[in-house]
Structures are given as C-alpha cells and as structure tokens.
Image (cartoon, rainbow, N blue to C red; front, top):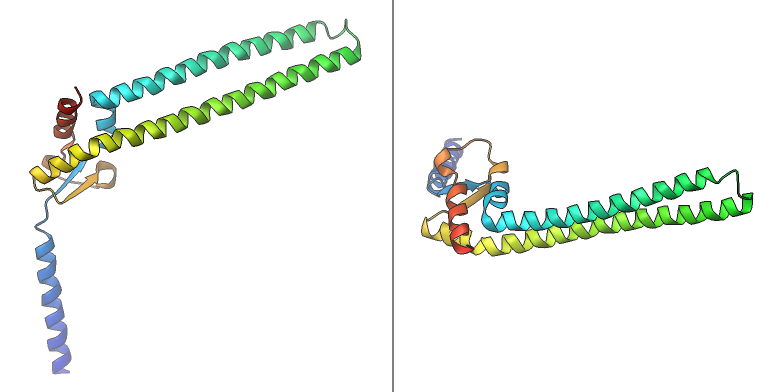
Length: 170
C-alpha cells in the first residue's frame, strides 16, 4: 500500500511538472474574417467576387423578365391559337425555364468555385507572412478567434498582421 501511494505521488508530481513546462508557450489569436475583409488584398478579392456575382444577378434578372414576358404573351394568345400550337409554345417556354434554372445553378456553382479558389490563393499568400511574424515574435501557437472562448486583448494580433499584409501587397 505504501509503495502504491509513493508511485501515485510520483506520477502526480511528474504530470504537474510537465504542465508547467508547456505553459511557457506563447499563444496568440487572429480574426481571419477581419483580415480578409480589411486587408487590401482581401478587399480586392472580395470586390472582384462581388462584381462577378452582381453581373450574374443582372443577367439572370434580364432572363427572368424575358421569361415572364413570354409567359404573359402566351397567356394572352391562349384562347386565340389552337390547342396544339399552345402546347408547343408552352413546351418551348418550359424548356426556356429549365435552361434558365440550369444556367442559374451553373452560375452559382461557378461563383462558389471561384470564391473557394480565390480564398485558397489568398490564404496561401498570407500564410508566409503569418509564419514570419510568428517566428519573429516567438509565437508557438496561433488560433482563429472563433475558436477562442476568452483571451487577453494583447494576444490578438489581427491588426498587426493586417499592417504586415498591407505592407507586403501594396
């Protein structure tokens, strides 16, 4: 029994000492969304994606207006034309609507792919800057602010990194 108590005491002291050693690591956190939205490189990336999205929206709105006009025209002449001719025109309109939906889905998919590719490119560009900053300031671990429950404001290095990124890519 005496040996078991000594053994437990030894393990307790050993693990207590290893906890103290790992507490000397310097930890910081950053807000990646803020870096993306306020750095010059991130702003230009987001602006480019937004412009492309706005162009797509404008084109889709024009197509939607054309389809509504075609539908209104078809409803106006519904009673004037023969039933076969009406069915043919209705089928053509349904094909146009399906093409519109497919085009819309394709545009959404393309903009999402472009956004993901551009974000990946953005993070690959800023990663060396972050690594260099971490090395210069002896930071061992860097967290995203979303994953930090509470921390000292002095541990938030977001604004410092934004300045570094703007210096590099200005």
